Length: 273
Figure 1: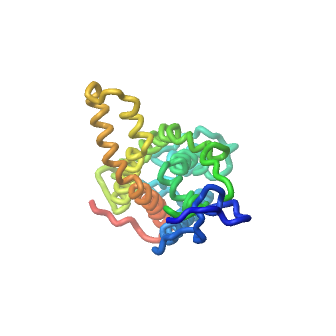
Figure 2: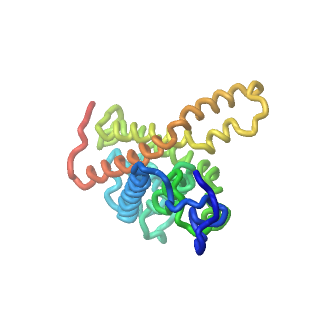
Figure 3: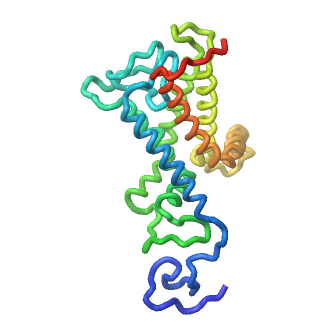
């Protein structure tokens, strides 16, 4: 690759001072734009769907299923759920959708996630759009300024995401009831919830922050065999963090959609036993 003096009058991207004097913005010949375009389309679809459902404040509960977007329900304007996560922390003064009180925690966890940062940086901001493709921005400050400085809160959002995952696990246990709240029953919704909670836990525990918490700052693994074993387990999961991020994103939306279809009477929940 030849280098030389930069073209006169240029000051950004690949033509900025100190960069190789190459006329093309990149030398890739593959369809590199497909990946960021697909990522942007997938994330945009989820944002549109989740925004609609979060502000709907309706059709999120049908015994024994509650949408993961609305659990736990922290306001007094929640639909009563028999044995469900009804905690009236916020009184009658809260008139907006109860989903807005809880979605901030899993949303903050995903927004600051290392994989999702890469996904929306490339998909929406083209920073950069792909490997070996220059970004179009004049300057680059990384995550050193507001609002991207808030990405450093990822570890704390991980702590908040753990109890939310625990509550969704409780919701999944409750799906082994029928519509009359009798135990010992299971329907197609039970299977949907089981798949969803398995993916949520796998995504949560494969997080880079989780891996650092269980095994970081150790000088000698041999002196901490339990933490070393946990570190190796989370390390294996971490290899699939990208796939788990997408799978759990799809599953939580599918879980909410299933509850919505039941609540609106679109179809009845098939029972296995």
